[in-house]
Structure formats: C-alpha cells, structure tokens
View 1 (spheres, one colour):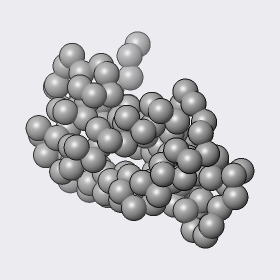
View 2 (tube, rainbow, N blue to C red):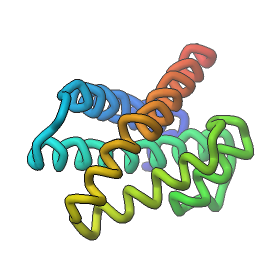
View 3 (cartoon, rainbow, N blue to C red):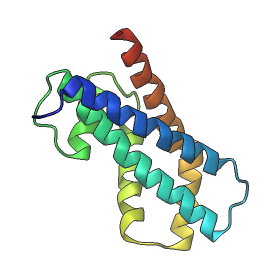
View 4 (cartoon, one colour):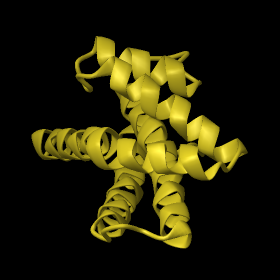
Length: 138
C-alpha cells in the first residue's frame, strides 16, 4: 500500500531538516582543510538530494504530477512560489552534479564558497518555508 503523499513529504522533511542542520554545523568550521571541505561538500550533496525529493513529495501532495527530475521539480517549485531564486537553485543543482562525479581542489574551494554564501541560505529558506507549510496544515 503506497504511503499517503501528505505524510510522505512530512517524513522526508524530517530528514531534510537534519541534513540542513549537519550542513550548518559543518559550515561553522573556519578555513577547512581538504577533509573538512570534502565533508561540507558531501553534506551539501545529501541536503540537495533531500531538498528536491522533499519538494517533489510536497508538490505531489498538492496534486502536481509528472515532476520526476530535479530540474522539473525546481521549476515547478519556482512557478508555485515555494522557492524564490530559481536561477540560484539551478546553479546549486549544477554544482551538486559536478561534485558527485569529480573532485578538483580548486573547484571544491569554489563550491564551498558558493555553499556558504548562496546555497546554504537557499536550503535553509526552503526548510523554513516547508516547516511553515506543516504548521498551516495542522
């Protein structure tokens, strides 16, 4: 028996929230070494994965269908006002895809900077927005 979509997104939101917290804790470390930078990037990758899947589950609970790829989910979330910076989300997705397949120290530094300055705020804003949605439904 499939899980109720309204429950699924809330369950996934719990995992997304924990991932955002771990990413935030990793970003507290100033001047990370190569191992710490790799951990920051790994937390970012996991958090991005959970972000788009949580968005997908939420949108499905709202009766949107045929949104199966991260790009289509981000586009629909932007269209519906769930996220504000569509270009920023697409940049984050592109960098997430780069980090999954290659590791280059210069690129890792650039992505770490983007995570700190751009991507973490996007992810945290989404978390706040989705948590507000859970309170609206109670």
